[in-house]
Length: 187
Image (cartoon, rainbow, N blue to C red; front, side, top):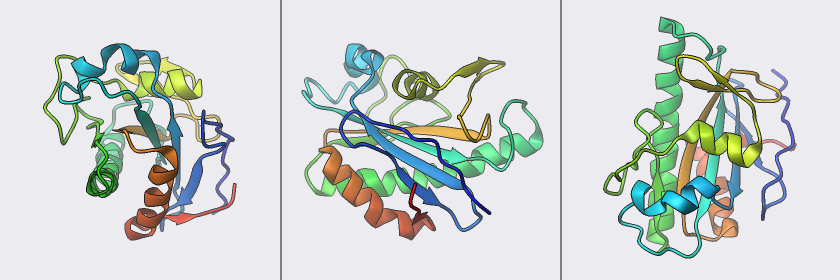
């Protein structure tokens, strides 16, 4: 299966880490400065993270086997599978960054609350942050659905937040990806 990637340019890195899983499904990981929403609401989203001067948002986009526009049994199973893949990868990435002395947490895509920190008073909205940082359109349906330039609505967004520098996040991401069945492809 040939995987087509759109170009995503981030504030510091240049372009995303493009990966492909064993089933041929693409994964795009990019590192960004936080959106205005995260900056304005950081302590309400992550109350344990008081006065962190530098935060980075890691966007993990997984290609879905089906369009995620309608709520069907097939779609819900696929979303749960993609959520589980992100949670496994995200926990490994967050703990690896924490082991290096950097705060890091992943946002549960289902609830919008951090997994490793105390939940805040407001949830994080992964789709809104991807829309703000990557400028991808969103379809407002029963829930908001992201529209990827290549994959359409067959995209599952998820977010990790860390104070680690982008070069460290990128290095650890590339080290961990093969452990999750993802191999890097040239863009």
